[in-house]
Image (tube, rainbow, N blue to C red; front, side, top):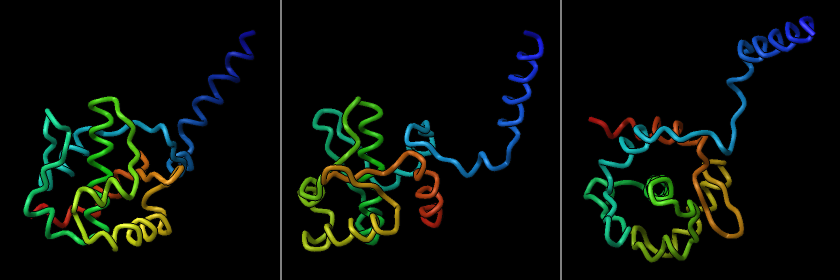
Length: 143
């Protein structure tokens, strides 16, 4: 019994110390809410009553792919705070009037092909494990 316990403890300690562990991601990985807030706050706010996005002038200066990444991150924030789904259809993004309607689907496809976002049943989302990469991408706007 003691030997079995020692083996289990050794296995647990070995797994926690394995540097390869850093390579593995999970769909259920926790979201750093502070990091998400800091990413979004320069570009938009969320109306409490309507849950719609109020985009800033700084948001309008972004490329179409950057706008969509911010929108998907904002939808994730809204889902975390309000307990809603974190996926959105292309038509819902088009209704936000953030970019020419004809460019939304192409930009979503480009982001999907580059594995920046994921798609399920025609709806798009930003995976939790991609959030830190998106934050790093937007560090250039801090100044």
